Amino acid sequence: MVAAVGALVVVGLVWITPRLQQSTGTLLVVASGRAAGELASSQLMIHRDGQWTAVGSISGPVPAAPLERQVLQSNVPPGEYDGIRVGTDTQAVTFVVAAGQVEPLLLGVDAGRLIPGAVYAGNDDVNLGLGELGGKFVAMPGFDLVDQAGNSFNQATTAGKDLVIAAFHTTCHETCPLYTAMFFQIAKSMPRNVILAEVTTDPAVDTPAALTGYSHTIGATWTFATGTPDQLMAFWKPFGVELASGDTHTSTLALVDSHGYVRLVYRGVPDVGHAIPPSLITGLSAGGLSELASGGDGWGAPDVLQALLTIAGPEQPATAGNGAAASFTLAATSGPKVSLQDLLGKPVVINFWASYCPPCRAEMPLLERQAGSQSGVHLALINEGDSPQTARSFLESAGVNATSLLDSDLSVGKAYRVSALPMTVFLHADGTIAAVHIGQLNEAVLAAELSTLVSQ
Image (tube, rainbow, N blue to C red; front, side, top):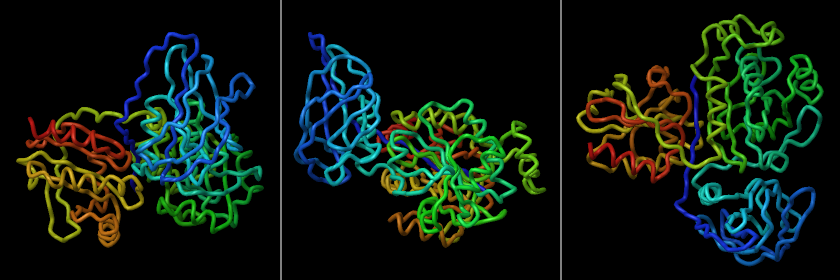
């Protein structure tokens, strides 16, 4: 099994915050959308200390991101605010207005209303928001489930929170209890703005009442969600997860940021060490005990917690490489085998991907355009675990002409310590690792890494 996905793109917009000689701060409100539209005349209000304060009226055309239009500029008292209201739409968002400074606020608008979760405050988040609204990231499709108490679990109730969601069902006795054990570990140290949710793949058995009993038995306090078969099939479809019961399952964990965009998807068995409650150990089958003892696929709670600290911020730089890259020889989607040795002599860009990885689809045309077209660089796409036909179909649907190498047994991914997809490894011409980037690449980061490679 494989670990999979995630990433960030930052639009190069720089907000200038001049010092104003006054005791108030300035709230600069801009609007943008996934498509061009219109914002009906509405009153903008901001929330602080239990009170709503009217700031001004906003209206007019809303351009498609990454373009934006200023809809309001207003002087407001300094302080920390925790929400905004536009008409009847209310969003939780934290922003700080400082005396003599400008605080930018981006409103994501669709069909004249706020997009749930799409309010961005501060320079970095506004840049991130324009990238998200501009289609640089993959949005989580709409969903409408219920939790163990029968309360709604959807984009409206999760807006403004980062989500950690895992596929599971209560009759699984192998990988699912290990994911639950990892949730116990994450819950001890996770940031406050996070919702943990295990979402079933077996709606026939996992009713709200069954999920309530399960959570009480193991002592879990996070969300367990269910729905109709159609609702759950739609929820899991983007991640290649099918409905299943018993010990038949596709082990998957995904991180969705507070604005509703997929950031990372892990596949496979987590390493939970020895920190697993007795109530979960007793529910493991022989196969589950074997997976527990094996240490999983080399990723676990520390990796997820680190990802949670970074997914809502600006693009993270690639980490410096270390040592020689592992050699490999793999069959290509077009048939012939290719080895790492065949590629050396020039710098090499190795991109690990899979068909169930939404950000892989988003970044692959960029890789082909920038790295594949450079005569001084070899681009090696390595598919993690898909069948040859699935890999070929994915490339065709993504409009990518490059062939891909097939890491069918995941051995190359393990040798390169792939913990999330997409992951890109930059190699010097002699085969030593220059840098590693986990998550979706943006154009600026890729250009910088390529420039560094070809200049050395």
